[in-house]
Amino acid sequence: MLALIAGSASQQLAEEIAAGLDIELVGRDVERFPDGEIHVRLHQELRDADTYIVQSTGPPAQEHLTELLLLADAAHRAGAGRITAVVPYVSYARQDRRTALGEPVGLRVVADVLRASPIERLVVVDPHTPALESIMGLPVATTTAVPLLAEALPLHADTDAVLIAPDLGAAKLVDRYASALDLDVAIIRKTRVTGAEVTARSVVGEVEGRRPIIVDDMISTAGTIESAADALHTAGAVEPIVVAATHALLVGPAVERLERLPLEMVVTTDSVAVPQTHLPIESVSLAGRLGEVVGRLHEGRPLDGLSSHQ
Ligand code: R5P
Image 1 (tube, rainbow, N blue to C red):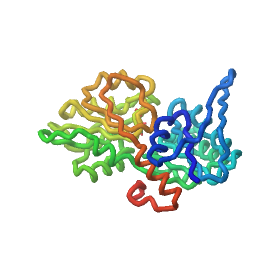
Image 2: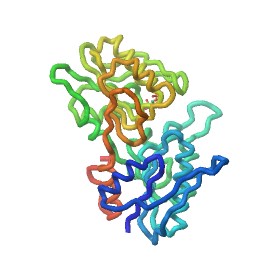
Image 3: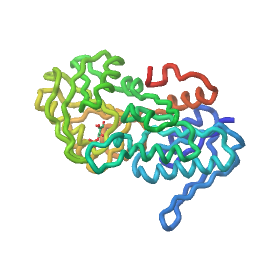
Image 4: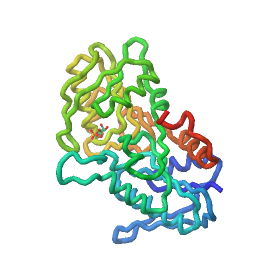
């Protein structure tokens, strides 16, 4: 038996995955005790079911992570068989190494906690770091939204488009878009000043007179996109610009920053719930792809064509 549980961060996505698989979600309550503790309760026994919990760990990251752990424990105690966490957006993935003395390796701490839970396997989408699987120490099925996002990009026949990696970390990602779209690539050299401030130092590649499509794994405060847009403007790129990112967290000053930009469109996914804004955001659903991944994992079939390792 296949069982699917929705965490509150991914309710709608889980409903769509369940509909695609033609199953009902496991009933559950998620509530809060007056002191702030999260309390979850499943409505049924799971009787050895192959169980999938869909829960992104976007903002508030700590709460959604804790809720995932509680749901996994509840599923285990309700008799679940193998438990897989479907975590489209994995928080703490940017803390995959120490960049200064005195820091922790945040992703390793999250990995230790997940490994201590009944979760046996993860499904993730375009994680920030390829080191995620080795740091997790659990089997990780990694899928990608790049083909879905590439298909949704507005391309104009009258202007020469160029794909932009807004920092060196996005170089491999931009290459995957370039293969899908057969477009040229330019890379921006970025320096992070603080968690919310970055500066773009220079553009490497030909962008003058071309329409830029900035691609990244995630938009958090949009500082990276803002500084990339400034650098592209200075380098003579055509406006408005297009942005594609798998995970649109849009926290802190992100919406204001994006509102100030000459933006044609932001293409993203429903890996996290995108806040309501007047921005031109097109969200592509991951439900079909994740449903296919869950279905194949359940049946023990290979993830050919869905895994980002191919
Ligand atoms: C960083 O390496 C990531 O790929 C993103 O570029 C970054 O995390 C986005 O953050 P923000 O939107 O706050 O600049």
